[in-house]
Image (cartoon, rainbow, N blue to C red; front, side, top):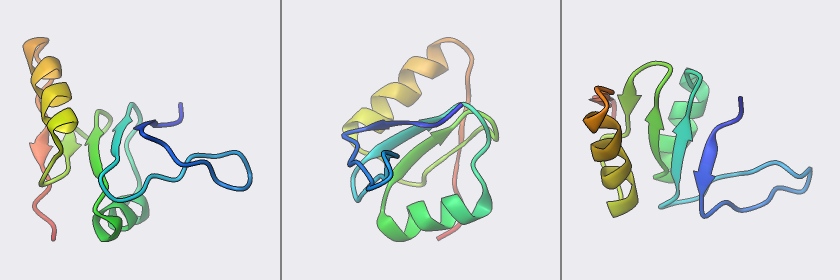
Length: 81
């Protein structure tokens, strides 16, 4: 399943390409390459597949993480930077 992106920007081929400040919620684990791209672009993410999240977050990212936490979903903050 493709990640859900808040405030998405459309790519030429119809896909979604997150930009700085966007929040991505991914059900399947994101690849290392994708995470590196997100870090470089300053995109926030919540990765349910690998149980990680971006080091920082927007108010939306923080609220979604709190909501998930109410149901026992714990996401470790990314240590890479």
